[in-house]
Amino acid sequence: MPHKKTLGLYKGLPKPYTSILIQMRSQRIGLRHFLFKIATTQQRAEGATDRCHCDEGSQTPMHVLLQCPLYTALRATMLNKVWYKTDLGRTTDYDTIISDSQAIRYVAEFMHRTGLLGQFRQVDYEDVDASINTPE
Image 1 (cartoon, rainbow, N blue to C red):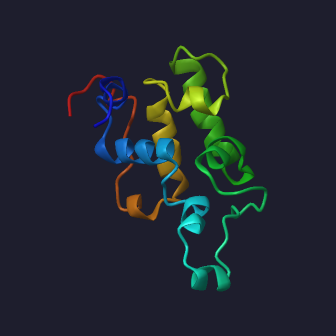
Image 2 (tube, rainbow, N blue to C red; image 1 turned 135 degrees about the horizontal axis):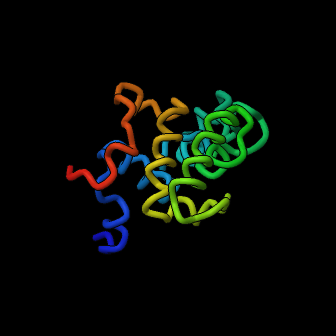
């Protein structure tokens, strides 16, 4: 059972965004790094890889969120929201950002907008600023 503090982190977020964040924090998410870890021998023989499409690293949540050059513009939008709409200041520390109750809404929005998570492609984008302090 999740700790009350952890559950409180997701309060007021749309359910798809809560799912994205739980997957990011647990590292069990539909990105190449995790999918490669659970790939079969046949999938690996057929060329399965953990490399990001940018070929600059393994496609992990941290790489996509803070490093991947394919999402520079989207990242800038997300970081501006984190820096100016939260109390975190100009941090780019992954653990800090994904553990802050204000910042996580922008993190989830960013990850959703990348289109990397196939299971969320049919989900409408949420106005995360409008959902602040709105009951589910």
